Amino acid sequence: MIRVIVTGAAGRMGREVLSAVGAESDMEVVAAVDPLHAGERVDDLTVMPDLAAAIAETKPDVLVDFTHPSVVALNISVALEAGVHCVVGTTGLAPEVVDELASAAPAGTCLFVAPNFAIGAVLMMRFAAEAARFMPHVEIIELHHDRKADAPSGTAMRTAQLIAEARTSVPAVPGRETEIAPGARGALVDEVSVHSVRLPGLVAHQEVLFGGLGQTLSIRHDTIDRTSFMPGVVLAVREIGKHSGLVVGLEHFMGE
Image 1 (cartoon, one colour):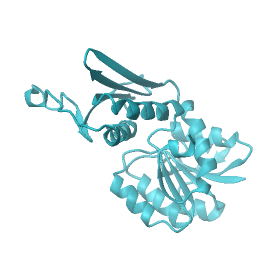
Image 2: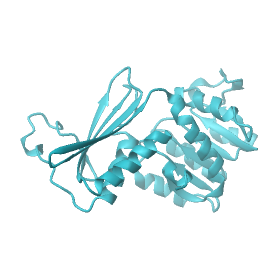
Image 3: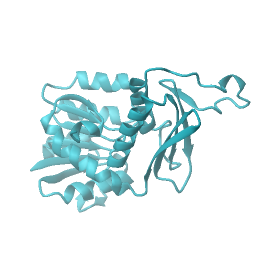
Image 4: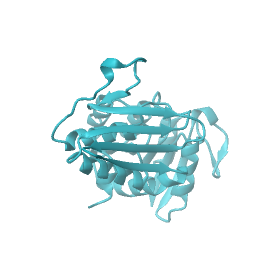
């Protein structure tokens, strides 16, 4: 039985995680932590205010964190120091911070970070990297709800990184020198233009648009409901105990 503690438990993603993990026969949610909702009942658990105290009391194997960029690093540090594996879905952490957290972790513990837990999104990123080998002209348009805490999204950042690693040439990104409004051509991430849209009514969406001589190729993924992330979260919780150190991306747990 894998013992799981969830931070950000009263949030939209946290509640989904509690439900999904609790439905698995080989997993048990032993604590829900959310300082802003301490004492509330969520999924038959009383929300606890302090992560360190919750870990000491419940002795979890795995932490699942869907919180906020301002607090996730501290949560990871506390959990890893206690020997708890970390499954992190919170985006917005700088890569150097992630590396520092992983390097300070005790031997045998794993820090797993995924920009997106939806299986379709992982496939979208994989297909985009493959396309970039043959069509290096590419831009990313990512669309999220208006309460998302970071821009560009972690998925867009990871996609740009994979594209940069895959393509053999970096074409010029035209139009920046003639921008009438600064930023009109998007942000450059690994020499890939990324455009972020934030609107109510959206959940999580991304289109990777390639252009070539007389043709375009569009690879798009749409998250219609947050339940789409749960199979990936459950997979990560189940697999993380087989790994140590830093692992980035759900594809490492999906096999070939």
